[in-house]
Amino acid sequence: TSNQMILCNAVSGAITLTLPAPSSANKFIFDIKKIDSSANACNIVVSGGANIDGSSSVAITTQWTNKEVQSNGTQYYLR
Image (cartoon, rainbow, N blue to C red; front, side, top):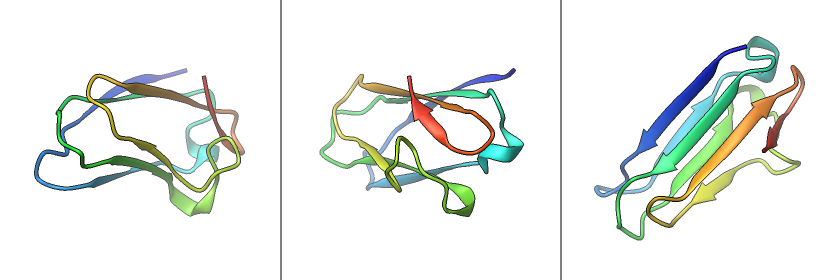
């Protein structure tokens, strides 16, 4: 198991963060937090087209908001 915290600063424009394929990150937990106050989004997608809770992407648009996602080896799920 591995945990990663990713700080997202989108002050210069929207950012897309691409998580590794779920099969290579089984049981990994990624905690992504938006640290700037801009209206720009931090978009989370998954390599290889896998989903996060059934969606192709998840956006964080509010400062100090975080999303935790965990892989089960096939997909990612919000915690």
